[in-house]
Image 1 (cartoon, helix red, strand yellow):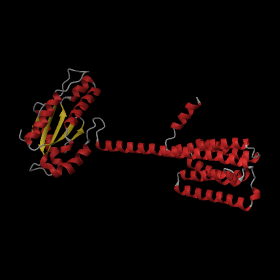
Image 2 (cartoon, helix red, strand yellow; image 1 turned 180 degrees about the horizontal axis):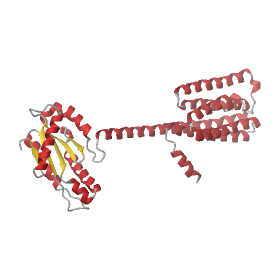
Image 3 (tube, one colour; image 1 turned 90 degrees about the vertical axis):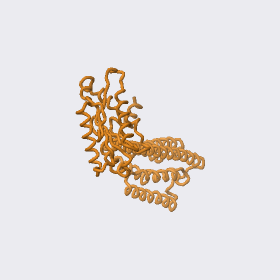
Image 4 (spheres, helix red, strand yellow; image 1 turned 120 degrees about the vertical axis):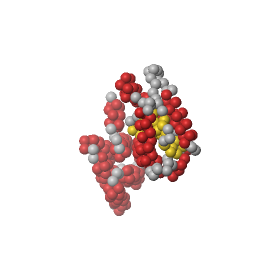
Length: 361
C-alpha cells in the first residue's frame, strides 16, 4: 500500500526540478539517518547525535512544506542553507572536525547547491554556503578547543562511513539527475517531432496537409514546374457511404485511399501527396509529358476502384478528378493551378464521375 502511494505521488512530479528535489531530499534524509545511527554507535556524544538527527527532522519538515505549498525551489534552497550554515557547522565541531568525515559532507552539500533551479539564487546560495563552510574551517583552526576530539579508532571509522555515505549519495543523485535529464530530452525531442509532423501532416490520413502543399507548390514545384502536373480528386458519393455504413467506415475508406496514394507517390522524384480538405486530395505528379502524367493519374483511379474491405465486401468506391500541367502558358502561380484543376474536378463530377479530366479532354 505504501509503495503504491509512493508511486502515485512520484508520477505526479511533472517537471525535472520537482523530481530532482524529491530525489535529493530522500538522499539527504537517508544519509542523515545513517549518520545518526553511526554517531550513536561511535558514542560521539549527545550533541553530535542530536545534530545528526536534526538532518532527518529538517528533511521531513521541508518535505511536508514542499508538498503542502509546492514551493519546491524555495524549500531546496532552504535545505542547502540549513545544512551548510547550521547543522553541518555544529556537526563539524561535535564530531571531531577535520579528523572526522564532516569535510566530506560539507563538500557534498556545496555540490548539491548546483541543482537549484534559479540561476541567480543558485550562485547566491553557493556563495553563502561556501563562506559558511570556510568560516567553520577557519574557526576550528583558530580555536581548536571548540572541536570535540575523538579517538583514532572512531576517526577512521567515521571517515570511512562518511566517505561511503557521501559517495553513494552523490552517485545516486547525479545518476538520477542525468537519467532524468535524458528522459526529459527524449520527451522534448518526441514532442518536437510530433509538432513538426502535425504542422506538415494531416492527422487522420498521414498525408501532407493543405498549408504544406501550398508551400511545396510555391517553392519546390515552381522552380521545376515543367516537370510537374497537379491532380486533384475526391471520392465519389462518400456521403452515401457514411450514411449507409457509418462515418467510422467512411474514414477507413479515406485512409485506404490515402495509403494507396502514399504508396504511389515517388518522393525521390519530387512527388507530393496531400489531403486538400474533406474527401479532396492532391497528387503532384512528376512526368516527362502530359500523356505520361495522365496515364499515371488514370492508373491510380483504376487501383482505387479495385479496393475492397472485409467488413463490407460489397462496397466499391471510385474517384473523380482533374489534372493540369504546372507549366501552362496562362499559369502564373499556384493559385491558378489549383483553380484550373478544381474546375476539371467539377467537370468530371458533372459528366459521369469515375474519371480523370484534363484541359484538352
